[in-house]
Length: 139
Image 1 (cartoon, rainbow, N blue to C red):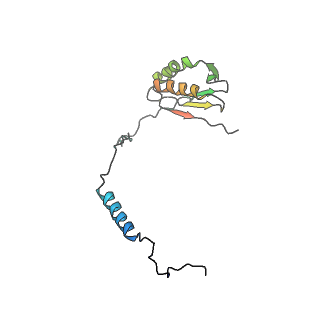
Image 2: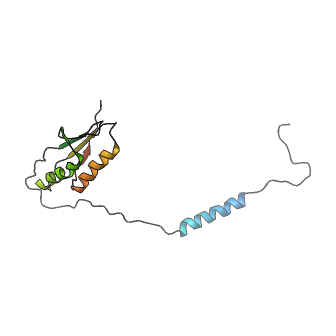
Image 3: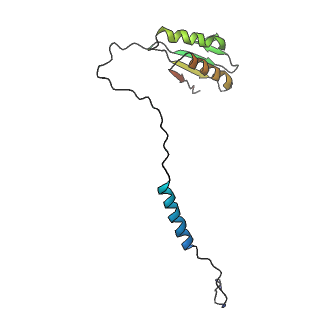
């Protein structure tokens, strides 16, 4: 016969776990209800509604094309530039018109070191550039 039966007259060795599961579910519900809800405030700067329309919108300036090649050389609009001079150049661009900054378009080679990109991004942050984009070349 494929099934064994417990008709041998001995005590049954199976444990009934149904009461244990019932108690655990009740405890789980109690803990879920009594646990304080933790909320962390997140500061979000949303744009505010204005009643007056924008007067004479400014034409955005030409974007700055910043390229990092495989040998970690940085090019500012296709002219080689040392990394140490980037922050001053970016600050000069920001100071022209802080409300209408040019977009910094960063193009990196896949073989470029991350450290160079980190220095470029740190220089942009220190120069208070707000429009930064990454260019993806699909070749």
